[in-house]
Figure 1 (cartoon, rainbow, N blue to C red):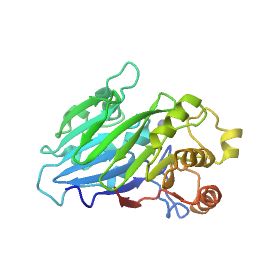
Figure 2: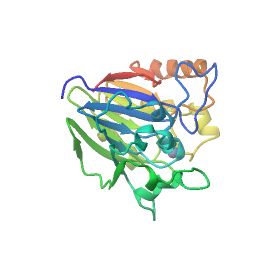
Figure 3: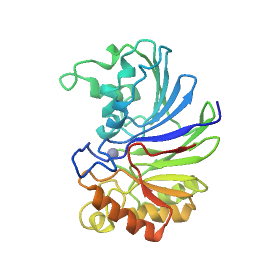
Figure 4: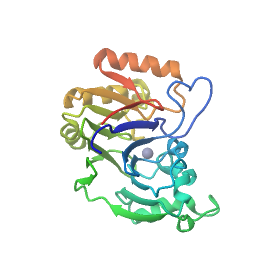
Length: 273
Ligand SMILES: [Zn+2]
């Protein structure tokens, strides 16, 4: 079971899903990542629209899904509404997250299932569910060891470090660099990682002129962390919804001029973990 695990990008777009002829290379689905562990167990990080393409109809076996949420902004959970495995009674879900202020994890997820915005209440989806509040203690699921770090984002967000049998991945999808303590902690958190998936929603100019305080980084911030932490591969993600394939390719070129092992997340990108 420890051999052959794969980490797959299901969605890499920030803020809202997009489509069109200029969005084909990197895709338009919002953030979600998947690690099937075998034995009917799957780990997901975030459940943006990218997760809605996943189905388990090819098996009659009950499935266990462990879903780690970075935060509760819609682009990270809205795929759950149309995640078909949620509607199968035999399936079991465990959700992990830092509860938002004055709300339980269950209510934060259930909010998107409420009338008049959605017809099926979370309690009426047939699968079984449990909810685990993260206290930043390490969690082990099969061969994966998962640790957490605080990110800088409106209403908070959580970064994940996932150590697998063959590689270590650090995920910082929604993070605005600039808080020295948080950033210094992230350097230690990402040190030695084979892959760093990091928010690069903006160019440095866009961030400086238009979007300071919006909770996202520029590619330059992502490169800075990758350099400081000495990661093997930087994977830019949380792409701006207006960023065309061509514009994104230019953004990657600029980032790779500073940190050569840079690419951008796209739907279907996968690697061994
Ligand atoms: Zn967000």
